[in-house]
Each structure stands twice: as C-alpha cells, then as structure tokens.
Image 1 (cartoon, helix red, strand yellow):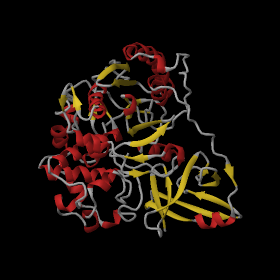
Image 2: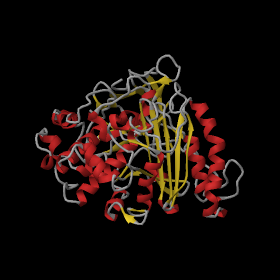
Image 3: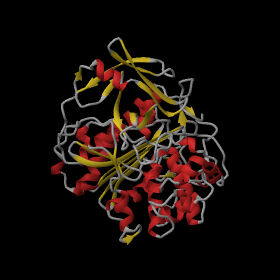
Image 4: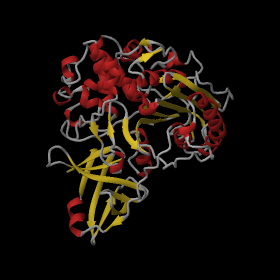
Length: 483
C-alpha cells in the first residue's frame, strides 16, 4: 500500500492525519452523570479518570474493531493514569501495557519539530534559512524552502505518503535530493497545506546539519534528554521491546495482523516513531512545564515555548474555533478552551494526542489498528478533566448559492496531479463537486452560513492565498490550487 486514492473515504483519513479531529460538543456535566469537574480535587483525578476509562474504553475497542490500546493521562508534572487495554496481537493474545511500543503515525510530527527546534537552539540549523544552506544537492526551488515553512505546512509542497519502501537510513537524503521543482504545487508561504513531504525534508535537513542520521538526531535531541528510553525510529530496535502488532481489516473485512510490517525510511520524520504511552507522556509533561521534567531542564525553555507558538492560521474550520498550526500541533478552541492536538493514522496503527496547557492536562491514546482512533475516549476524558464550559455555537444553516457564486467558484483544483484533484462545475444554476476517483463522482454543493461549503458529508472552504491571484479549495487539511 503506497498511496491512498483521493476519494471520499480517503478524505476522512486525511482529515484525521492533519489532526482535524471530529469533536463532540460536551456539556458541563460528563455523560456518566459525574458532577462538574470544577469540584474535583487534583488528588481525586486518578480515581475518577480510572473509573471512567475502565468503563468506556473496552466498549470503544469493540465498537471500532481495535484489538488494543494504551492510554496515559498527565496532570501537571505527573502521569496520573497509565493503562493498557485489549491485546497487542490477536494471534498471541498478549495484553497491552502502557510501556508497550506502538507506531504513532503523524503524531511523530511534534517530536520531529521538537528535535529541529532543539538543533536550532544548539546552532546546527536556522529556522528561516534555506534548506540548501544545510543540505546541498537539492533542486533550486526545493532548496529555497525554510524549516519554518516546512514545519508549519506552508512550504507549498504536494502531499505524499508511502508505507513500504527502503530500509537503509541513507534513503532519506537520497529521497529529498531526487525531488524536482515540480513537487511544489504553489509558491512557498502562500497557504497552509498539510504535507508529509515537508516533514521528510525537515528531517533530512536535521540529519545533515547535526551530522547524524535522522534516527540518531531524534535519539540525542529528544528521546535521551526526556528519558524516553524505549522510543525509536528503528524497527529492529523496537522489536527488542514489547511491541504491539499493527492490525488491519483489508479487503476481507476480517481484522488481522498486518504482514509484512510496514516501513519506509523516506517518511520516518512524518510518521514513524515507535513509542509507548508512558514515554510519550514524558514529552507532554515537558511541554506543560516549559521543558522541565523531574526537576531537570530536559529541553530548553525556548524550544518548548516556540514549539507551542501558533505559526499560521488554518482555513476550513468553524470560525469560532480560531484554528491554527504551531509546530507539529493543530491549535483550536474547543468548548471555550485552547487545545493543542494531533491525530495519526497509518497502516496498522492510530494515535491521538491532546494538550491543554491552561489546565495542565495531557492525553495520549495509542491503538493498534489502521485508523484506530478512540475519539469517544478522548472526548470523555477531556470532559472529565477540563472545567465544564459550553461554548457551542448554533450549527450553520444552508444558504442560497447564487449563480454568480457558482461561476466564480468553478474550476479545476490540484494539489497532487492524478491523486489529489477536484473540480467544481457550475451546472444548471448549481455547483457540483466532481471527483472521478470517488464512488460518488458528482456531489451537489451547498453553502453554509459560516462561509464554508458542503458536499455530501465533507466540508470545504474556498480561500485566497497571500498572493491574491491564487485561489484554493481547502479540504481535509489540504489546499488544492485553482488552475
């Protein structure tokens, strides 16, 4: 499995990869009838969270067909809850533990960002210098891209993904040096558009500048300082620890262990870290405490503060959420609270991470099934831990789409030719979204009162770039440029 077609099912997957999590509006009271969390002393949180998760996680594993999961909850500078549920493999029945390794997919991006920022603090790289300054041999337009734009998804690079490929770690540098200028679908800095390729290039620059492989740089700059002793990029190292096996339903519909184990060095920086719930929780503790962990300054304070600083707005969300992107983290306002989060999906695994600094809360959920995302667990845990605030907005309503609006929107929109292309067609006074790769190749478009558009079960936005001549269809975290 190298690439997913850009059909409607793939759009849902890409939405999750981009960290755009479907969030239920939770009232001030948790659904299990507990009192408002304002009344919960911090000392009572471990008991309350254990009672909640022990009652809901097994049910969600069953409902989603996920064999197992590991969950950790951080409050302040402590892991207050860490537990495994289900099994690491349907074949062996080995129970999951919070120290067991999972492949975390795109939540890797916040760790790659932390390593780049740590390297910058040590003088190895500069966020706003051209990539070619540290990594010669790149195509001219690729070499002019900066680490800042790569890490905040404003480099103008197409999307790309692969789950099977070379294993030799030198392949990462060879990969990015093989790119041509045609991998840019628009001008750097013009618009936010999620790109795994951007993180591949950032990881390659990190490796070259620090005179290490990417895996070694991650170990030295992030894992070792934070005491994440089991975390690694290398499958041959991960398999020496208790390791959850990836599962997928495939074409048969029966959930089974994924064989062979997926691996492609070229995309390691975008989504291939192996870590445990307990290890990842240490990273979240450092983020909540300006880099301190166990009384030690494990990461420089400026690295953590920069990591959490919003770098760009992200279109396509409800305006009330004020969505943006920091470095490897989506930033949104949910239920009146500012939250940082990211989701990750890859073949065999899924992960969710949420950080709520104003309440000193961190949540890690790792699962061992393709697209295994325990969204109900994430929301119920958040509702228990964060003071109840109901800032829900009335749902947007449909508005008339004028003939003039339809004609102005009509056009061919492209990110990755042949894979991520959509067309808006003005037809008989209506607007049609055409996607030949979808099971529903033509869907009627409606406009909503919050300025967005809806086609079937997908919502998208039409936005302008910084350069007014550029128009984009923004969907599932990705910008497609009007041709």
